[in-house]
Image 1: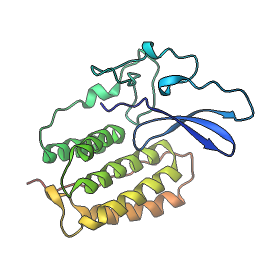
Image 2: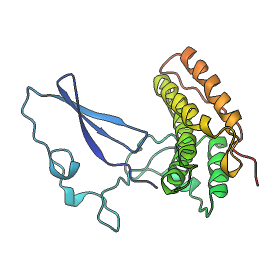
Image 3: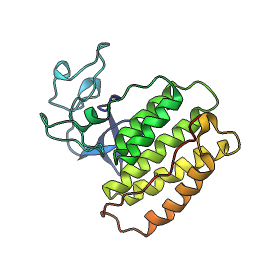
Image 4: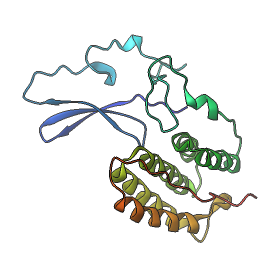
Length: 210
């Protein structure tokens, strides 16, 4: 699992907004006026949190062990983490695609995004941005399933943009042309769908097995 507990401080309209999340997901925690006294904690944690009490990996870096559902929404501590249902090891880009495709089919797009994001970060070839586009596609599907149409439109648009350069030279058998067309179509669908109402998008095959 990727670390999900990084905290940022973002100034918007003279207010400080606490945000945490991974590369593509951000969740607003709290907004505080700059006119009020504000004590910023060290190590990126919120005031009142003891950094030594946070979950950390073997290198001492903080991460979040809070369980999540198939859409990445936090569950109460002690609840069953659905991520365990989709924990699959893979050793190649092709296997990562197989796993992500299965997760999307099983309505677990958040976990598919984690697989694809790991592949994106690990890739050192010209295909790196293709993986980024695939991860963004999965995030767009997750936003739509949460009822966040604005987020879905934004991420599917970025996915289309990042996938398009690989339409004529797709690595690992990825069906880039079909996925770009699908993203563009779903952007229109999400634009017309009422915000706040869940929408499950059926993703086509990610790749042709080699």
